[in-house]
Amino acid sequence: MNLNQLDTEQSNPDSLHIDEMSTIDILTTINNEDQKVALAVKEVLPKISIAVDCIYYQMCKGGRLIYIGAGTSGRLGILDASECPPTYGVDPRLVQGLIAGGKEALTAAIEGAEDSQDLAVEDLKNIHLTVKDVVCGIAASGRTPYVIGGLEYARTLGCQTVSVCCVHNGEISKYSHYPIEVITGPEVIAGSTRMKAGTAQKLVLNMISTSVMIKRGKVYKNLMVDLQPTNEKLKTRAINIVSQSLDCSEEESIKLLTKCHYNVKIAILSGLTGKDEKECEEALLKNNGSTPKTMR
Image 1 (spheres, rainbow, N blue to C red):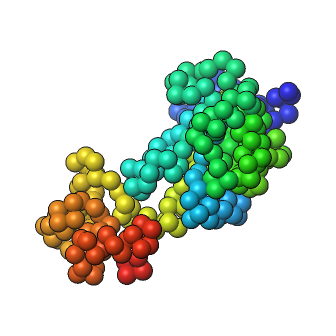
Image 2 (image 1 turned 120 degrees about the vertical axis):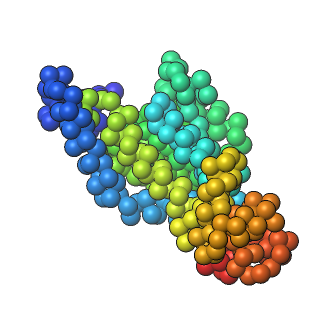
C-alpha cells in the first residue's frame, strides 16, 4: 500500500501554514476548498445518472440499494439510507447501509474491520443479498478491502454494482459496473477525508437516493408527498404540502388529512380527484405506490 500516491493523501499547498493562521483565515481556507467540491461532482453527473437509472430499474424488479463502506464512508451510507423511510415512506429494507464493524463502528473505530473482505461477505449474506439488489461501495481512498470484498461478492451473485471514491483509478472501480470517481484533491488537513471527500460522497449519495425516489413517484412537483408525519413539525409540513399541492386553506388541508389518516399522498389525490380514501388507495396500489398520472 502506497498512500502517498493517492489524491486524497497529498499535502495541500493552500493550507500548508494553517496551523499559524487566525481563526477567520482557517475558516476561509476550509470554505475555499469546500467550494471546489460541488464542481468536482458536476464533472461526474453523467456517471451518476447512469447509476441512478440502473438502481431504479433494479428496484422496479423488487431489488434494494445496499450501501457498503468503512469509517466515514460507511457512516455516510447509513445516514443516507436511514433518511429514506421518514422522507419518502419506503420500507427500511429498501435502502440499507452496511459499515465495517457493525453498529459499534458508528461511534468508534473497530480495529481491523475495514481490512477484512470476508467480513463484508458475511454482512451481505446476513441481509440475504440477491441478484435483484444493487451494491454501492463507498471508499474515499478507493482501496478499502471491506468494500472490495463486498463488491466482488455481489458480482459473483450477478448483482449490479456501483462505487463512489475520490481518487483517480480507484481500486474499487475495478469491481464496479458503474464507477463514480469524484476527484476532490488534497484535503485542508492531509488525509482527513471526512472533509472534502466526505462532502463529495454525501452530495453523490443525496443525488442517488433522491433521484431514485423521484423516479419512483415519491415526489409530486417538488414536494415529498410520502412524508411520514411522525411528530408535530412533520404534521405541520404535511399540512403545508397538501395546501401547496391543492392551493387550498390550512383548514381544508387538515380536514383532508384527517379523513385520510394523515396520508399526504392520498389526501392530495382525494383533493384532486374528489374520490374517497379507499378509491385513492386502490389507485396507488395499481401504481405500486407511485404517483398516479392524475397527480402529475
